[in-house]
Amino acid sequence: MSVKPSGVILPPPLIYLVFVASAWGLAQWVPLDLPEHELLHYAGWVSIAVGIVLMLWAALAMFGHRTTINPYGKPSSLLQTGPFRFSRNPIYLADTLIYCGIGLLLGSLWPWLLLPLLIYCVQRTVIIHEEHMLTRLFGDEYRSYRRRVRRWL
Image 1 (tube, rainbow, N blue to C red):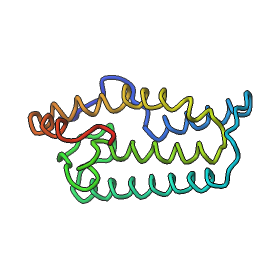
Image 2 (image 1 turned 180 degrees about the vertical axis):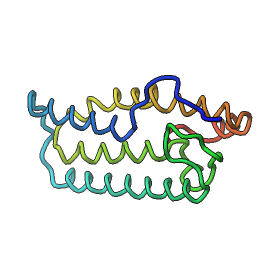
Image 3 (image 1 turned 135 degrees about the vertical axis):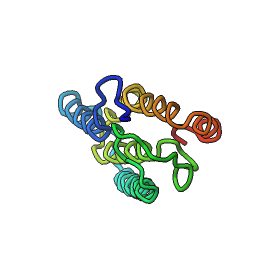
Image 4 (image 1 turned 90 degrees about the horizontal axis):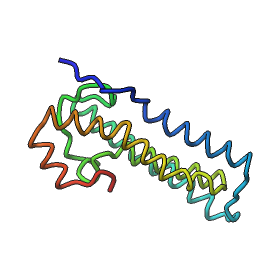
């Protein structure tokens, strides 16, 4: 039996890309520059690197347990090890770290102003769907996991 999304779910990387593009466009149209500082530039690259490492760690854990990384797919197991010990959504956390790093490199306030809306969109369009599906598939085991592990950090 296939578990289908109840509505249209954009792929999470596309959601993040839309917000990066929007922040860049707004920065071109109405500049709201951050103060220029070399430290912000380095922090941006560090945030991107940490996001990539976290994403790879989570993806390797998922592949190691032979479960899907696709939010449209049906997971075969409930991961509670690796980065999933600390966050129920380490890949979205990684995406957010990468977005924040890009925001620092853009040197604009716009990515930070859009960040709450981005997180809201990801939670409402993707995470809520995934949590409902995991509850249907894994029941009490998932409810117990939700009580122990935070959604983001």
